[in-house]
Length: 348
View 1 (tube, rainbow, N blue to C red):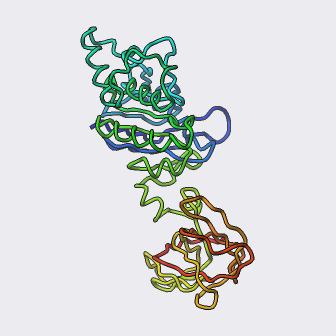
View 2 (cartoon, rainbow, N blue to C red):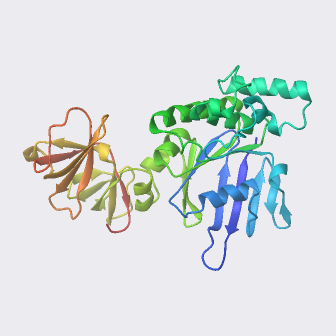
View 3 (cartoon, rainbow, N blue to C red):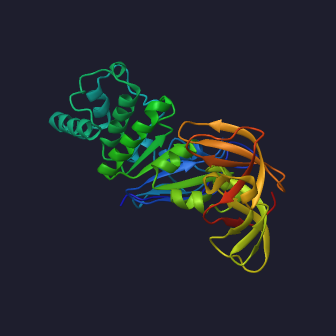
């Protein structure tokens, strides 16, 4: 299998803290892994090191058991068998769709190239589009052609560098789903670099969150969302409600009431209890364990976030609710809990 393995990667652009600081990352063969993180965390640098556009100062990059970069080794990009889908597709404007896809098929004769282009057009759902020019395609079609071009030489690894960022919001979700389906059908190993948390969680098999040049946590989207390693990561990958609490066995006492914990810490412990906004419900103020005043309502169509200043909490909390809204700022409401929470040592 075409596994990607990055070990102890270091890359600095000058004196000071390296952009990559001993980073470790493994992408299983045949999977789609997203690399997510705030600006300046090293996402783009990692992609460029893997692709061979940058030489790491230390560490190793291995794909399909083949050392691409390490002490005394730095294969150029064209010898790495890595396909790249850049932002906005970056198709050659003077070449037809077919010639764009065939660009990297230098080891095939003309009938072989024609056959491979046809396979790729079928794979990405664009049969019969070979003679069209890039400017005749929609943004989503251009991204599919860029993916076909990257997959055509049968690379060991495909790198996707924020490939959906230039698409409008209505098209982005559909193209993401199409690209995911194509990668799964082809069996390709892929690494998606993105700054969009929703994109990473909804698209990838695994998500690696970078922080200060290292992987803070790597796991399935469900693991990152429900079992983040610390409060920072909890807030980064989604909306988080963090309230001070004291745990006694598998229950934490908080200003929101007694909250069951998914994992019981050893002994009596203070910390931050993590809840997600969808675990909270609005109720009548006099029938709930906690109550407060609505300070803001943000409507998104499919749901809304209601901000409530809860009695006994220094900071307001967000509650995700669906259905018709029956609250407005200034109304006093109760807050009820559903599900389990996790406890993280630390202070708010």
